[in-house]
Length: 599
Image 1 (cartoon, helix red, strand yellow):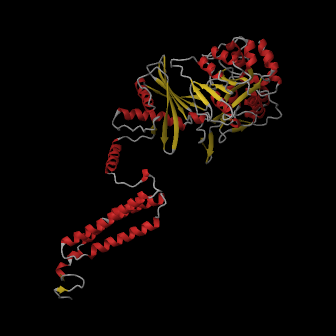
Image 2: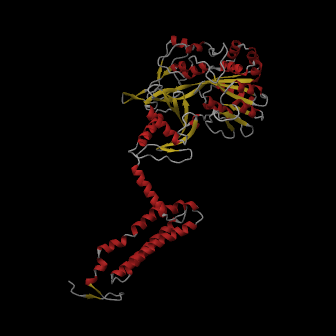
Image 3: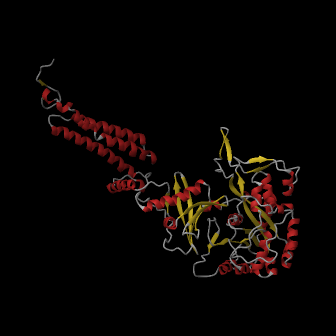
């Protein structure tokens, strides 16, 4: 046991007594020496080391320097004579200064390195730290929403506070989008029902309209205004057509939503079109053309003269086909242009002329005439607006320009009749024609749950198919067996169909066909088309049913007799809307199909 009252310690300028030992042994001073090392070490590992790795700075060398500086700081802190409190605090201050200098030197040298971009240079910005803290505090007051919404200017729409009516409106607006994505809908619509000031929400799923929820008028108005506000549209204007895009993020999924509002007699209507650009992007091989139709199409494209008509109803894929075929022309060696009311996608190398029907200025036909007079090689007209436009196209130089004209018609023969009616001169109309393409969209069976069956001989006979060759067809399922229990198919959600594919008629017109059109002999023209042995829409659809792509019920649905020409189109002559060309397959459309939806 030591009973010495004083100890001489070599290296110290004074004498330490045992009573003074608390200066070295006090626990709180030892803990205080470690305090500066915690933020210093965090900053080295979370910021400086990652910064060096990101911009390929000498990472290992810097880590060695940092460790050496830390060791020096500790030695300096404990090497000073500890005769008083002032000496301890002086050592602690020197240690803090050394550690701070280490960080400052790294930032200074790293910022001078050419590998570090100016916007990524290290700096201490207290204002940004305060702003970040304020943003986090505000976020705690805001409600939790599932979607991140970005306007056309890329600005993010912040979620409202939980205890506000605006939060309820946003939740209701997001619910429409979420249901659309979960049901694989391509479009969601809010339209007035005309009863009790209510609005109906519906979804377009694989080309078939499916009903959604009904909303009271005040709630629906707020939801529509929310989407218009997100798209930076004029919320107060409820009559004029307005269109803009909103970016929507949900987790890792990112989609573009095209918001369209327009006034109707019963009230404002809102449409949300999901991924509009992706919907119209197809290669020619992915359109759904059969092999002989593809050969006929390529011959039409190579001809590069005269007028080719595109025919189809609403939501029949005409825009997709127009974009695809226009892109088959080399836009870098030819002058290729389009005239559109609503541009759905950007076409590389192609000049897309947008016509605003609500703006003061030239008529649609005048715009088309102006373009055609500049000797373009290819012009795609996205919609035949009126008879005046048809006349301008027919009068153009057919030997120097290929013009694609899209119109609403049920089949190829009806399209030619509508074209002739619009031009008003059979000779002029027939002289310009080089081809006609008509199309419809059919739903594809879900390959995960489709059901194979053997059709009866009577059924095969009614379809106009050889009974001895058709041994198996498919129909929609909607359910799968999971552990020997029927469950809703996870792929199609129980609908039995996933996606759509086009069915076409593709006919080129030679001198013989143009002479028949000039004479207005539509029956003879129909016979002439049949002689070509090219598939009609019904035959193409049946081919897809035989191949298991679709069902006979879907073939019946899309080949049922269509409606007359819609508004904006000239009325067809008395021979209009004849049955599509083809043999017994025409009768496929006659039997009613229970529960089938109209196209």
